[in-house]
Structure formats: structure tokens, C-alpha cells
Length: 296
Image (cartoon, rainbow, N blue to C red; front, side, top):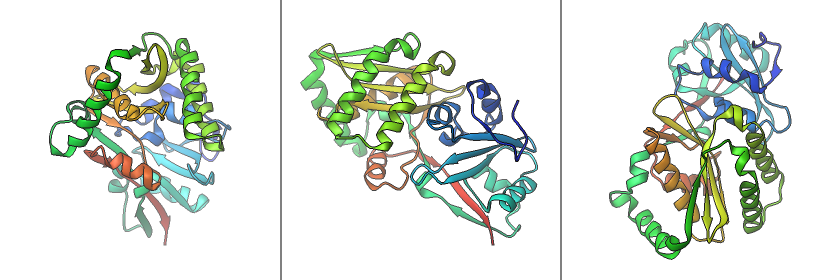
């Protein structure tokens, strides 16, 4: 049972069903996805409560760690947002559906937050790579398969994630070494993946290990949602192997499609230019738009 605003509580594994019910009327925004919130809560800073039957979220900004407050739900939105703005000044990561339903004459400044738009891919297009726009990807994928095809192995998760922990940790070490990463962001992501592994029985995640010459070189962890959506949570690999991430993404799309998914949420780019160009390079079908709201 969620506490009532303004009494926030730390997110716990037993909140999963209640949170998923609260967001079920919305498209699958990554910020409100339970697996994402729970696994990335590496320092007990993700907090939740309810206000007028809406889910209220407090979480650290993805880049600055300053607190962000947000809301998702359909009940008494104008009243709920006014209460939040009175108390915290600004709310962010607000889904487009909420912005469309509130009274825009209510002395509000509503601003698109492009850096936090979720990228939505048409899974079939990224499985087939048909058309001129994917000519480069088809060529790269063909070269990768030609070079490594004889030694590739895909170990699809058939058991909880914890059964693949050794292989996942091996890949994380390879990734960190190949990227020369040992910063706080890399450590937090490792912790988030470990939290997902530790609670894999409850989180019901899917994915695979990519082996080359019987050695783990990459992995993908994703989630099949209760509709025609999937969401990507983690993709890591030995980046000294050229085009390995393209192959992993292509395989992820294949298995998402095989499970019946039509769309894949690949989360936001945070305004990081290299990440934005990489995500745009896969030609998103559309975005899940988010907004910030404050008073005049």
C-alpha cells in the first residue's frame, strides 16, 4: 500500500504490482517502469507515494542527481499538479497524455523536455533492416556475421537472470576495460544490473548472452510488457569487437518480435550528443514525449 502525499517511501520490490497497475493506462514510459526505477535505485533515493490516486515519483536527475518530482495518473490532475507545484516549484518527466488533459489556462508554463523523450522503435523494421535508410546497418550486420558467424552462440535466458550472473559480470568487466570506464556512472550501472540479477525471480526479465568462441562477449536484458511493447534495460559488450552492439540490438529485436512485441522503448538520450546520434541512427518510429511544468 502506497503512503499518501507528502509522505514518501522508498521503492520496494513488493510495490511492483501496485505501480504497474497505476501506470497501466499509459504507454510504457521508461521513467515509471518498475524494473527501471527499482534496479537503478542504487542509493535508496527513488521514492514514491500517492496523491488523489495518482502515482507521485521523486527521483534523482539522471545527470545532476538533483531531485525531480513527477506524476502519472488520471485523477484530479489539475488539483494534484497545483499541490505539487505549490510544494516543490516544478515537476518533470510528465507524460504527454497528462499535459493534454490538464487545464492549460491554469497559469502554467509547460515546456517540452526533448532530452528525456523515450525513443520508440518499430521492431519489424529493425529485424528486417529493409529500405535505403537501413542500408548501412544491413552492410555492417552482414560483415559482422561473415566475420564471426562460425563462432557465434546465443544463450537465450531460459531461467531467472541469477543463473547467468557469472557471464554477465564477465561481460561487464570486458565492457569497462574496453571503454576505460571506472567512473561513478559506470559503478551505478553495475550496481543496477546486480540489483536486477538479485531480484530476477520477481522482475521476470528476458534476454541473452552473446558468446564468441564459447566466451561471453555481450548481453542484452529486456522486458516483455503486457501488451505489444518491450523495453530495453541493459545492453553491454566488449566494444573492441567492431559492430557487436549492432548485432546485439538486432538480436534483441528478433526475440522481442518472436514474443509478439511491435514496439520497443529504448529510453532517452539525456541530451548527450553521441547517444542522441546513435539512437537517431536507428530511425525511431516516434517518441514518448515528456514535459516540465511550473507556475508563471
